[in-house]
Amino acid sequence: MERSRSVYLPWLIIAIALAALLWLAGRLAGVLAPFVTAAILAYILDPAVDRLQEKGLSRTGSLLLVMVGGFIAILGLILIVVPMLVSQAQALAARLPVLVDFVQHQALPRINAWLGTSLSIDSDSWRNVLSQNAGNVRQTITRVAPQLTHGGALLLSSLANLSLLPILLYYFLHGWDDMVARIASLIPRRWEAEVGRIAREVDSMLGQFLRGQLSVMLIMAAIYGGGLWLVGLDSGLAIGIIAGLLVFIPYLGAFLGLLLATLAAVLQYDSASGILMVWGVFMVGQMLESFLVTPYLVGERIGLSPMTVIFALMAFGELMGFVGILLALPLSAISVILMRHLVRHYFNSGFYQRKIDP
Image (cartoon, rainbow, N blue to C red; front, top):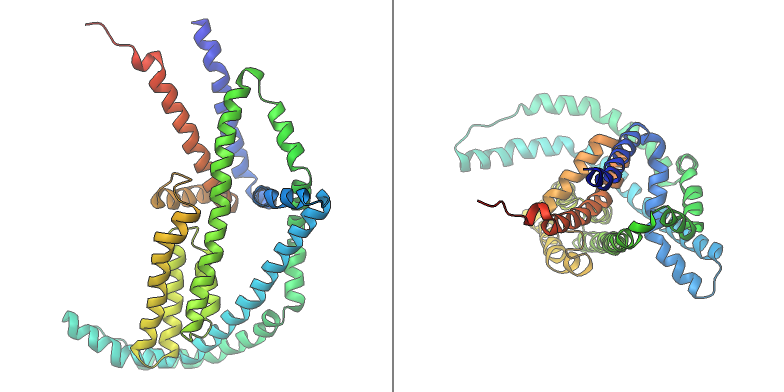
């Protein structure tokens, strides 16, 4: 009995400590957000810093080069996407009355004919409401648009509010190897081999998944954005980039992108051919993502089904807010590996294999 207690007591202590850490993370989610974000970014970017360091650059020079490159990419993305979305919002505000007439006189009669229903809307009331408020909407967008389009003070203010993130990222990247070594030194020596094997498995799977998923996001942003730009959709590049960057949440990126692109196409084109071309871009994009891009770059490295990924994002987001969303996939991946090892130990245990004599 004493031996049994001595075996299971450390695991009980670890479980209690992990539960306490999760509870504390939920309570301090707002404070932890930049730290967790910086740690995940450091984990993703550390191999790039190591490669530059192998080329002869110093550690400081390598990480500064990687950070500046990432900053320029994010800034360029903001300057491309935001003005296009503002332009699309202005076009939507101007054409809402036309859209209501289209729904009333063309879309609803066809739907009623197909389904045998009698759906209708009071177009006069809607037109009056839209006419009364469209001017206010346009004035608001007009006041905000120059600030968003030209960058200026709003962009600098946003960067100032996020100034803690690059500072934390710098320190995480600069001391990443030392931090990993210090954590490894805390592991009891009798567990060192087993924990090291699990840690290497987690690192291999999680690193490949995160970097592969980042590549998928960039490639799909290029496919959706380029495709919508080629078919001539206004703000198609911005909508495509948003859809591509959201593909890490299964189905959400494609669905949201298709919804925004369809709305933009309805406002822009006078025939169904334009809408069909937009739908064709997303159909081709989904096929490429499902059968080529994601299987090649990510594959089954994380071992989670799309429904499990959605549940993990929603559950951790509900428990810990933005920090939970950041940690959802890493913690889920770690849980999968730990469960594999626990199941293997269970099948090899005397409790499972011992038979009761009749």
